[in-house]
Image 1 (cartoon, rainbow, N blue to C red):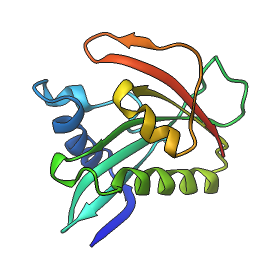
Image 2 (image 1 turned 60 degrees about the horizontal axis):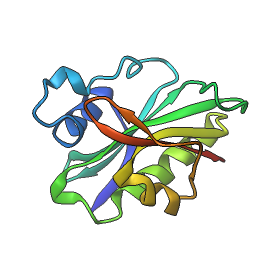
Image 3 (image 1 turned 45 degrees about the horizontal axis):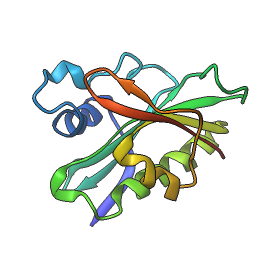
Image 4 (image 1 turned 90 degrees about the vertical axis):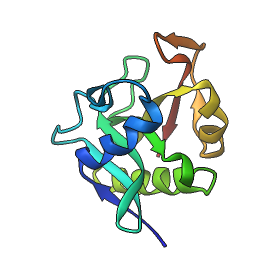
Length: 145
């Protein structure tokens, strides 16, 4: 049975590392905003351990004029648990928690391989693709809640 709930930054980092930063130092999975007051992490727990995570950071993007913007970042599901709908569960939970906190707008930098997933979650591409050095092609995406 899976449980979706808020988790600690350390739990989020432990899932991010093997999925998003494989072969890089553990510190590469730590985001500068991980422990800020308005940052929160959502995780999927399976058999008492986190197997998926996504982070929401209160951060404005200059491309958008919306109030209470949050960046969705660090979406990761351990390989053995992928393709089970866990990412969608986490995004829905994160959106619900964000609404409770007064957030109204989410933006993210999606890897090319993740664009279709976010489009299914009703996120829209904004602008042209761009390259994140060392990671690859990305698209800026957005959603008003």
